[in-house]
Length: 134
Length: 144
Image (cartoon, rainbow over all chains, first blue to last red):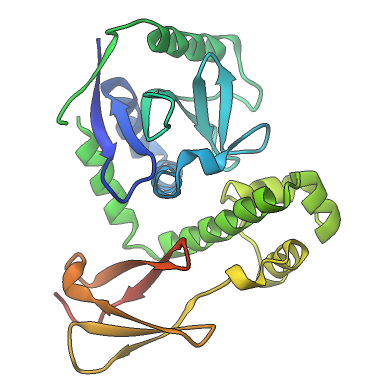
């Protein structure tokens, strides 16, 4: 079971963002070494959340990219950190950030694709996640 | 571990000069994204029309490009986005604290009651211009 905590949730957000314990732990840990990259990434995610993730979705070059199976990856050019998750439902008002990792190089490696596949599996399987503190 | 730590980290970052520069980059990216959608242009089309390289446009789009005013001007000109550019050019404290009068580049004024916002040295002010949410940032000399 993946428990999701409130990251950016409230009326001011077009897309509310929930974060899994796994992704949260990873980002907190990485912030010790990659302070600037994590701060800027969080700042961007919050900014995108305010205006709505849908505005930032697109193909190559867009910060929010559909990876297939309803799974999206969030990332920027300035760092190799990637956040993986999916929308709670079709209205796209709530995004569940399930996983996060640091890419080893620009091109996705096999194990990174596997992480994305695992998130797709969580999306497909009922009762594999739960929001806390609603 | 909790998401609260990440939010605290972000709040601390927002007190730094770097965060102000980062926000300006994000603001430009928002204008570019919105106009690209309105015009139904690709990044390549914008690159061609503005005389920029496509990777540059991509970095602007994700808020990663540390642009100059000249390059931002070229992009916005190509997009015909002049009406989208607004900044707070003056913050007047009229003595009737806690109301601030914000003067915008287009000459309009907005009144903001700081009591509606977070306390502290920095107040982050959000309001609507037309239907577009615009975020202005001002630094208060007084604490609330």
